[in-house]
Length: 389
Image 1 (spheres, one colour):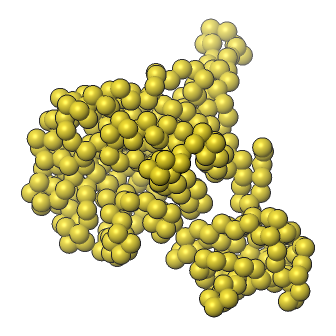
Image 2 (tube, one colour; image 1 turned 90 degrees about the vertical axis):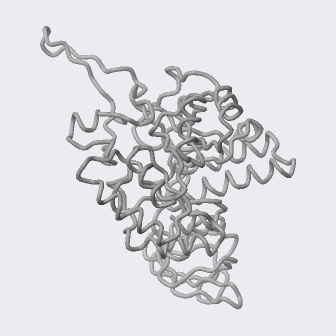
């Protein structure tokens, strides 16, 4: 996912390691890998931002010290944090820091407070409107980062106790099990067997944020950095979302970001995991229509495992693939995904089987096809299957 984000045009990547971040249940990097991770980002002129944004208890202060010293040694570009203990340790270690959205900064006075503490950037609360963002930016004179895409939380700045209350897993320590995404019933304690389904739209589960149609307004409002909420997502999610926003931003500055292009980009984003799209708080307080109507994803496509890459011939840019499952026909699209490769998406106009042009292939067949991007032996191949229009 890191390599995919870099390849698809991210200017900076934020990530957690094995402690002190709000994705404790994710497949995180190890702190011992920090130097390698940062070096890989810097090799492609991409900045590396380390999240140290969980609440910090007394017994964890030494762990914060150790982690930030490792960040200094690894040349991490910025720490994303909000606990005053982490802020103080960043100051002591000379580490640039950005205030996390967990701090709920919603006004210019709070922004100036953190600016005076040495913060270089602030991720504003998701509850800020576009007009509020403009005013805070003008009055505080500090770099502003806002979320533009991804999951939204029912709680203010994600500080929720529902998971802790039900399962003993704290969202404030990065262990949230997202019980808010489920459907709930209300029972009448006085009348046996009397219950109500609480709406039909999952009233604790907001739709995902999607601001690609309004990216021009955010740029003109003076937002310095656009944040994609993408951790714990699949590599193809990262590929589709990062490349779409990269394209939108670049086309804006070229004067080519038309309404038709925006619609095309929304269509692309709908192909990967989403709960439906919303503009969040940017233009108004979300109403009942801004909540998810189903459990899980509304993606228009899904990936189905096909097989693996056997070889890649660099000179001719040919991939040799074995189909271990399913079938393939000319006109299908595939993902090739690998630890080093990241994600490569190909629409197959033609391919060869037994060195002859073929219109279809089945499990057990070996095929070759044109592939302009470098892929690698043992990369996994998936067919992209449409679920709905």
